[in-house]
Image (cartoon, rainbow, N blue to C red; front, side, top):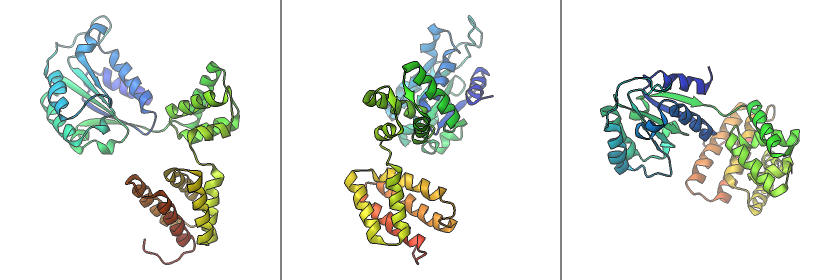
Length: 314
């Protein structure tokens, strides 16, 4: 039974409780699938009175939890009986899309509402990061996690879109699109759409790299090679070139991480661990608003020290 099949079985069991659906990618597709399963629970005329959907564009602060959500959850419904081919269970459903964007205060207020009205209302939390759902809520829910789509699934769907839209993608472009979208089908479609608007019906691998903002592989490879040379001046020059070209430091960090992890005989596991620890700390600093140039220099210097096995405080 597939991921969506499991959720369908759970929802149609008519005895489902609270649910957290966490997505590593392409959450909107799965979110839509979940909504479609809920649509088939109630007759069309009952849907608005039985299902409340709120997403990130709606105000979902503590006041909304205490008023709109609480008022909707408190209203009782009739008993279980199938009507016109619809199961019509004796509970209402509240769907909170992108629930990880809710404030902690709002989530705490929601906990009490869930406890009080659990007999007549079920909650579905759809999120990207389950760690941002407070533990008192997460512990009350059945959890469904979805991994990024495989390259085979991505390729099949992208080829279907290309055939329908009259687009031409060669094998290299198709492989590049799967790689840069990282299993996120929505992101892949966005890149494909941008490429079609800018370059026409024939889209190359280079075109997709341009519209995606991904740093060319040779740029990151040059930085890594400069670090392997052990000469800070050479590494400093590569960092200057990266900053001058306007490449985002966060993207450089992500792609450098891939090169480090995939390196086989070049560096030892201990050296990889030291460099990856530095990359993680740098990524955190960038999120906090640190200067990109200084952080790239720090990555370069620490990478040189790790590869040269210099003494350092890690």
